[in-house]
Image (cartoon, rainbow, N blue to C red):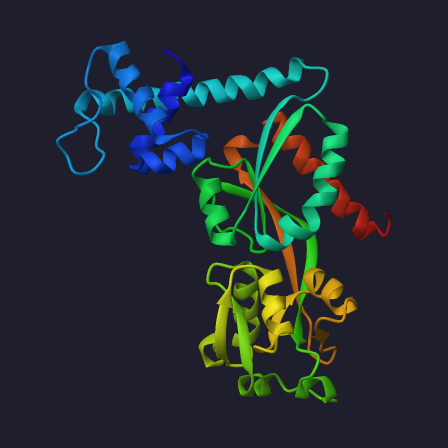
Length: 303
């Protein structure tokens, strides 16, 4: 018997989907089925109720699942704690990020971390803030960096970067010739919006609420899943939008879109978050302290 079988079985009970487990473990669905069958052969007992229309453990399967979770947890703790005996950090770091930090901040951050700790294998998953936070709570990633501060006593967060939302328009648009912008006039124009669950959309909603405007009051014409897609639709004249300054500046310099300077910039922060129970993980601890030191240096005025 090996840990891979136990991991596959535990994930299958939790996700109730062979395809999801196969995707997470990077193998085929038949391979997962073979591992489950092999685990049953090891114990000489049936672990799954195959008469059920959904994936459900037998009483014995439920017992094995509970024990497997403890074994996998202890193994992960052992892997983490043994790191202190290495001259340099080795192991895996699974990072989840929302689109903006994952696209515009991570290349430099990960490059520097890899230079310091070349034996740490880093994997990065980019999605909207809500999905990434869910993965953290489900132990599918070790740390996350998103544009909203999680509200959970299971999570500890530190601000590691800042950004702002800017108003962008196509090059030929009435707002480019406006000397004065009233936020309420935004309802007069077509809007390209980020998808629900996006940190950018959440910050935008909070900003509009201050002026008694709901995002549903805007004339939205399309919803997109990334800042680059949003900029592309604005460039083609579909509408105006609010987007990260980190994404807008390169597009503006390339002459693709206009940034409306009269619009009040909406400040936002990006937070590095991890589960409280993983704070002593050497890799997570070093990665977190490395980013935290960078933000401290910027606040002190040094670079």
